[in-house]
Image (cartoon, rainbow, N blue to C red):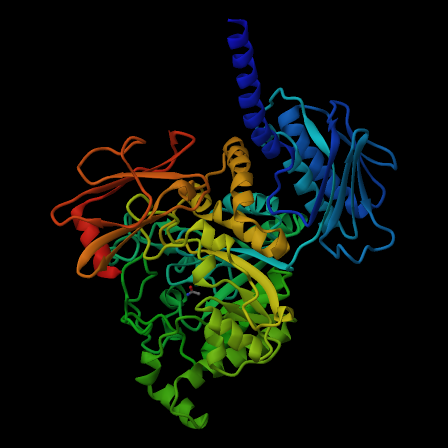
Length: 635
Ligand code: ACM
């Protein structure tokens, strides 16, 4: 009896220790993005109710105040900020710059007596603070007061980014996001040390920035008829139907958001997308396009283009500025000059993507301009327009950046290229000596589905978390000096709310943040997944939405020798996959997946579920016979 009891106690200790070590490993230091160097020591430091944050150099004050604010909210502690040498948390700007850590790096030292964050620049202190916050128990993310022991491990961290451009793009044209929502989006991105918000402000579906010299852009162009359901399939605006959906940012609001971002070391880079994607501008001022069609409305998400398999397309509503009309250049001059004055960003994004030239080809004035340019290639018209935009930006002290279509014409070497179509395009840009921001659809498009299409909000393409994580922003054969960094792009055709924007952004943006910040050698998928568990809990407390699709089965249906086959992959480690084809609901007693299997003939429904530690963890995925046939047809 006694020996049985002893055995029981021993087993309990063993179980406790093995679980405990996993929990402890997660709780001790779990930072995203992974820092360059982390040395964990023994011991802890605890934040006390009378803690004081000190700084010596006034440039550090605003970071100190933001940190105090972050700490006060969940703890209820007073957390004072003082210009002094000694205190519990010291923010130090180096008198002699440490060349290793650069402008955004930091050193964070936690001892049992206190905390010191040192950096060359305030931005580095700010990123040190983001890491410091991640060392606390997850409850530090709470908006409400919580009673917790606010202890962090004794640790020394040295950290700095791999790339200087670490961005997210937010499309506010397809759906409008309020200033408060944009600021909330910034609040989250900075926790992952992202530093650039590419603000897609104009497109066919809404013009969102007040331009004083062209007031109709927001009186007319910011509003469309309201539609629900799948964007791209909506009914046309009906005669007399009021345009009630939309919104725009006044210049005062923009200045406020830019300042808010600057305080958090985020550069907001605006995009005014020309010469295509301009239907909202054309609805406001129809003379800007070749057809001068006064019936053109801000597009509410109706289909207005046919896309062909070779990537070409035809727009059957004119959404393109007329490159042969001088009034267009007056317009562009005013718009880009006003926008340049609003945004301190070094770069202004001019779009340049998916420009349909069919209306140019049918237009006599465009033909005349082509003759003058000694060409029969309408692409030269786009090049002509872009070179004039480049001069407008230059006059305003700005550099131009555009989607990689701008490489099809001749552009100045100082113009940067935002790579999206393929990695090959980045190689082309580097070959021509352009700086490049990497945002290829293959790894960076956050509007794509992140799990099985049967359980995700439908979008035409997929991008799973692991593919984001595996992204190396430097393509093979390209010199890293050309790569400014990278960016995740959130197009919002199917994203109407901030909660859904968060769901599409995270955790993929955390993976991208690690691609853009951490040394390649420090990246490890299994380790990232473990840190994500902690990150998910923190996001729950912060009330930030995210996707858990990494726990879902990745199902591929294909045809082999005239038979239907199924192959199932997993992303997160330690998942087990169970499935049924007999109509039953799968559980851990069902067939366990080990290798690709044949789906029998007949109206078979395939049901798949993932388990971890003997508990279901992923979505139940149900593929009925119709879905199975559809997937075979596209594979
Ligand atoms: C793009 O996705 N059209 C840049």
